[in-house]
Length: 376
Image 1 (cartoon, rainbow, N blue to C red):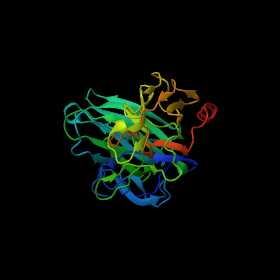
Image 2: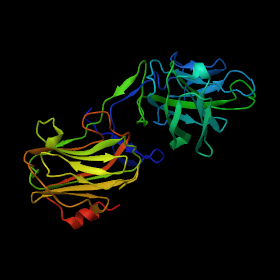
Image 3: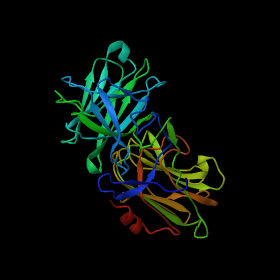
Image 4: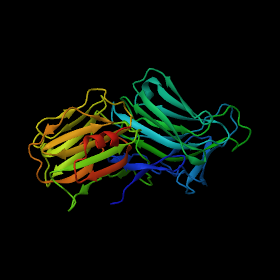
C-alpha cells in the first residue's frame, strides 16, 4: 500500500519502469505449495516441497517427480476451475524449470471436455525456449495466445490465454516433465512454482496465494500538484515501454479538476488497439485531437507530451505533433495529474503497462523540445 511497484527484466533484474496494473485475482489456492490437497496429483507422481530456490530467491519451489517406472509417463498436477464462467477468457501462468528432460507441458481441458474429449496442449521446450500448441478434438475451448519468458537460474514463466467454452467445470494440468521410459522411481522430475489462473485476456504479474484466492488491488499512480503547479501552462510527458497488450481501449493520462467524477471535466488521453491515440475533454477543450488509425503498432513503445499554454493545447506522440493546436474552453482548477493504465476506475487497464518515465514541467515546452523529447 502506498508503495510503487516496478517491472524488471526477468533475466538481468534491470528495473524497466513503473508497473501499473488493474485489479486482478489469482483463482488458485496454494500457488507455491503443490503438496496441498487443492492440487490433484496423478497417482504416479509426488511432490518434494521447497526443493530449490524459486525465481524470487526464496526456497519455496517444489520438485515434481515420478513414483513408478511405467513407460510413456506424463504425471500431472491438476487445478479444477470451479465455477468458471461460460464462453469467457482465462489466463493461465506458471513458473517451470527443467529437470532431467528438456520438455514440460500444460494441458487446458475446456468446459466441453467431458462430452467431447477435446483439449489443448502447450509443450514447453526449455532447450529451444519455445512453445508448441496442440489442439485435440472439436471442443469449444479455443487457443488465443501463449508466451514463454526466460528468468534467471534456469526458470521460465509460461502463460497462455484461452476461451474455455461452455459446459462443466474446466481443469488445467501441469506436467513438469515428459519422458519415454523412466529408469527408476524419482528419476524423472521437474520444478514448479507460482501457478496463477485469472479471468482475463492477458496474464498479469504474479500474485501469491495460500489457502484461498487472492485479489490484488489496482495500482493507482497519481500526483496532486502543489505550489509548483501552473494551471495556465504546463507540459506532461510519459514514456511507455513496449510489452503491454491493451484491451479495446485504455486511458493513459488524466488531468482532472478537483473533486469531479465527470470525464467531461478532465483532459483524457486514450489509447486503442486499433492504433489511435485520442485526447478529449468536452468541457475543457474545444475539440478532440485524434491520431490516424494504425498510427502505432501493438506493443510498440510510446512517448507522448501534452502542452498547455496560451489558451491552447498540443499533443506530440513518437516524434510528431498530432493534428493542430486546439483551443481551451476552461482549464481552470486543474489540480490532479494521473498517469493511468486503463479507463477511469474500471477494468480496462492493460496488463503490465510499463511506465518508464513520467515528467511534469510547469511551463509549455517549445515545439522543438517536444518533438525531440518524444522521438523514439
